[in-house]
Each structure stands twice: as structure tokens, then as C-alpha cells.
Image (tube, rainbow, N blue to C red):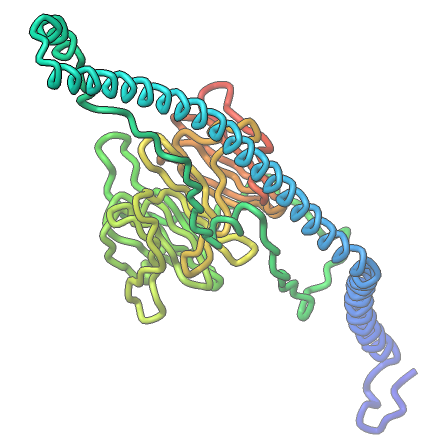
Length: 409
């Protein structure tokens, strides 16, 4: 049998059958792709519908939590007011007793002096020499006070209300978060064709070129990956370097401190400068710009958070804490003590936030690598302190981990 078309008379029916099968295979594959896409859309639709149906309860629960927090603060304030009032009552009684005693002492002393004055006046009139001789040692022995104690009354000093401080202590509302999940152009792959790699693939190795420090031979201290798949590196030099993933150096920026702690924020690399206690960024025009200063606190690890804020590790003398800052340097939250009032940290170093919003802090100064995997786990290698501390987004201690053999990852 042959094709009935004049121009295709030489084609056999088998050739047409092959063409039809090829077209059907292509159409079927594309239809499978669209059905897979529809399945994804349906899942997202169901999730969005659930979110909408639970929206009222979620926001009402949030309002209830804020109200409960307010009531808790009202109770704390009422209890503290009562405590101060009780202190004033106790001081009132104490002051009254002290002043009454002092008043009595003054009255007795004045009474003695008045008696001496009366006797002296009588002797001046009588001119009695014998009485004068007896009275002379008496009046000479009567001493006078060189000083006396003056008691002040208690004064209530109203501390200035720092809105940043009480907001950080009370709590704040996390903004609505947007997470872009790409659906367009997603390649459909049949389930039976997906294969896991037996051996991890190393696509590239980047040589940073940083010099080694003399104490620990460390070169690379921190890294931050950009949206366009490049990586900023900080190391043991006064430079930050930008590489592509093939290891080609794209840019070098001079800084006034070593590149110990860096992160990405709003598509710009941000780093800490311990010399002048500032957080700085590299602007789009390649200039170093100061974002905010931490005054007497030395900055260590920094990271951007899912809420659009900064999480910063701070040191001062033997104190350590984690502070949440806005982009302008406003303090939103401070994490320093556990529920028992004991210090959480001894020597904070690097910091990260996992997908749950938990804050992960390594308790050392350097020599640490932090990686957050897709499940939200933090993988850490710390060669000295060997301890990782995790607190939740409210600053409440969750757990700590220490490697058994002195190092872990």
C-alpha cells in the first residue's frame, strides 16, 4: 500500500505509521507535562484554599497571643508597682524611726545646753566663786557636735522609655513572607527516570588565594552566595573577593578589617568591621557604605533573617549576645540569657537561621563552616569550642550540641 498523495506516492504506509506514532508520542509527552503541571497547581490550590479557610483563626490566634502578652506585661507592671509602693512604705517607717530618734537626741542636747545656759546666767548674777569653780569643769566637758547625719527622703527616678528596648522585649509581628517557587518551564521527568547520585559530585573547586594566618593556618573564613550563582569570600586579608562558580575572580573590594563574617542582604554583600564596630555593605556602585554601629559591642557573626532583619553576634568583655537589628540599626530583639537568667553564650562566632526560623549560633570565634541543608539542618565544623547553640525565633533556648571526639560536622 502506498500514500495516495501525488507528492508522496513513494511513501509506504509504514512510514506514515511511524510519523503518526512519533507525533502521538510527542503529544502524549507534552500532555503528561501539562498534567504534571496541573497536579502541582491543584496541590497549590488546595494549600491556598486551606490557608484562606484558616486565615481567620490564624490572625485571631495572633491577636490573642498579643493580648495575652499585654496582660502578662500589665501583671508584671502591677506587681512591680506594688513592690515599689511596698518599698516606699517600708522606707517611710524606717525614715520615721530614724528621724524620731534624731529628733529626740537633738531635744535632749538642747535641753542640756539650756540648763547650762541657765546655770551660767545665775552664776553671772551671784558672783559665787565656789559655785563657779564647781561649774567650770562641767561646762568645759560639755561637748558640741562636729557633724551630724542628715537623712534624705526616697526619690522615684522614672527611667526614660526606650521604644526600641521595650519592643524588643515585648515582641513584634513578623511581616508576611514571600517565597518564589518556580513552576513555569519546569521540566517533566518520569518518576522511573530519576536517579540519585551514588557519589557526591564536585562541580568546581575555587581557590580563594587568601594568605594563611600564622596561628591556625586558616585562609577562608566565610562565604555568601549571590542570587546569580556567584560567591563572595572573606578570608585572612583586608579584602572581599567575588568569584563565579568556575573559580574565576570577578571583583575584589578592599576593607579595613579581615573578612571574618559576611552575608547577603537585599542582593548586596554585608560584612562586620570589628575595628570601628560597624556593619557595612558593598553598594551597587562598589563603594563601602556603613549601615549602622554597635557602639561598645564588638561585632562577630552576621546573617540576614527571613523576616528581612539582621541577626548579629556581639561581644563586650566577657558578655555575649545575639541582637536582631532592622536595616537602619534599630534594635528589635536581644537574646543573651536563658529562662533561668544564665548566659546562653560564652564566645559566639558564626550565626545562621534555619527554615524553621530557629537561630543557630556556634560558640567560638573562627574556624567554622556553616551549611543549611534543604531540611533546615545546620551542619557545623568547629575545631576548638565544639558547641552549637540553637534558640527559636523568640530567643528561647532549644538545644545545644557538642561533638564527642572534639570535632563535628
